[in-house]
Picture 1 (cartoon, rainbow, N blue to C red):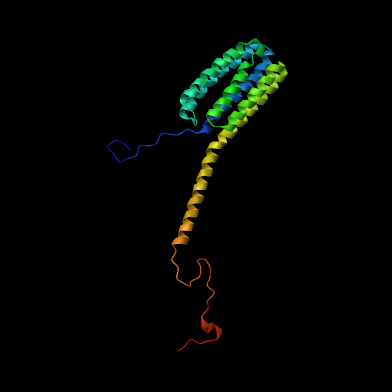
Picture 2 (cartoon, helix red, strand yellow):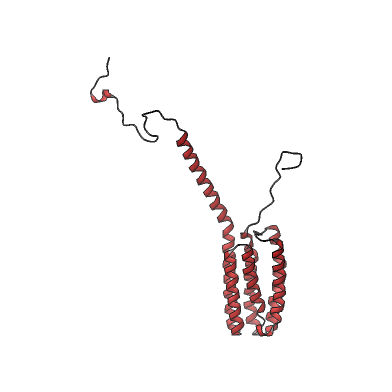
Length: 225
């Protein structure tokens, strides 16, 4: 309520987990670019690491304005999201610098960060996609084969794009189902209220049923004079 007035103030816009579809799609595009990079550099770990580190930073800078104008669910304290963002970028730097990871350490870090972010948002599809990215990234590091890295990066991108598509459909469809459910409950309430408040006389037929009573004169009997 406004101070000194009886008018209600408009409520602040609430976030929705479906708004995460843009950054998730951006991560999918990042891995698609990683597949192209793995094909172009032909096993050059330094350039592969540089791509993942720089693209992660660019993704954070590009996704931030969208999430400000289209807030996510924010099911966790804001500090948790800030810590996660800093940890992902630092992890990508460190993971890319480790020679044993063949420049693919940032891949695993991004997958872990995506799964943790999905857990903060209570979005199972994001947790699943992040877990798949981690598993495929570990396989790519263990194999250290450029052609296999290409295929696994494409598979990771497909998982993330599918997750973004699911999130994109989640918002409007969930609202549509909620509106339909509310309308069904309101209609059921009106029907039950109408039956309970309709007055009835003793001996009268139930509402909705045709009476079987017929005048006696129709059976050949005359009414008394």
